Image (cartoon, rainbow, N blue to C red; front, side):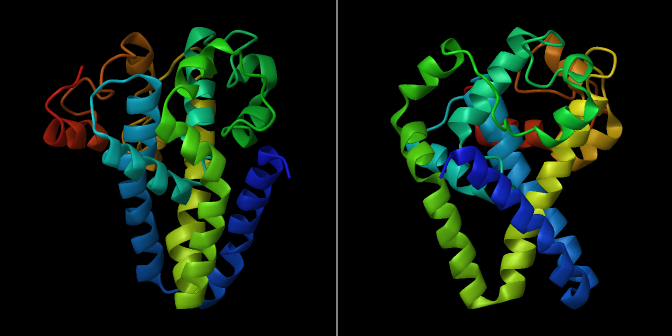
Length: 239
C-alpha cells in the first residue's frame, strides 16, 4: 500500500475516533490530549521536523533524533524525511506555483487537507541531502510499522488511551497546521495568533520567512514561542 494511502487512512481513522472521544471522554481527557499535543509539537514537529530537519537551527545527537521521529508519529505528520522535503520546497517557492502550500495557486481546501503532502511532487534536490541521513531513512522505512504498533499497544492497554493519547493529537495537528498554512499565506507570509496557539509557536509565519535559519520564530517579547524557549534551554549550539 502506498504511503500516501496509509497516511490518509491514518487521518481518517483518527478523526473517526472523535466519536468515542465525545461519547466516553471526560473534560480532563481533552485537556490532557491538548497538552500532550503541545509537547509533541514542541519536541517533534515544530522543534524537530521543522526547526531541526528542515532548517538545522540547532545541533542534537542521534538518540534525540530518534526521539523526534518517534514522537512525530503521534502527530500523524508522516515520516520526517518527507515532511522536511515538502517544507524545504515550500520555502524555495513560497507563494509560487511549485509551492506545495500555495494558497493562491492550489486553493484553500487543497492546502488545508494537503498539509502533510498527499501526492505532492517534490523536487529531487530537496530530498537528496535528507536521504543521506540513516536515522531519517530508518524511520521512513518503518514509520507505519511503528505507528500501527503504537495503536495496537495503546488499545490493548486501554482504548481511551489510544483515543486521547494517539488519535486526538493527530486530529489537533491536522487542523492546527491546516489553519496555519491557510492563515499564514493569505497575502504572502502572515503572522497568525490562532495558528500560533495550535502549533506551539509556528504562527509567527512572516517572522519565520524573514529569518528561516533562526531557531526563534517569535521575535518580539510578546510573541509566544514555546518551542524557541525549549530549544534555548536544551541546546547550546543553535542559530
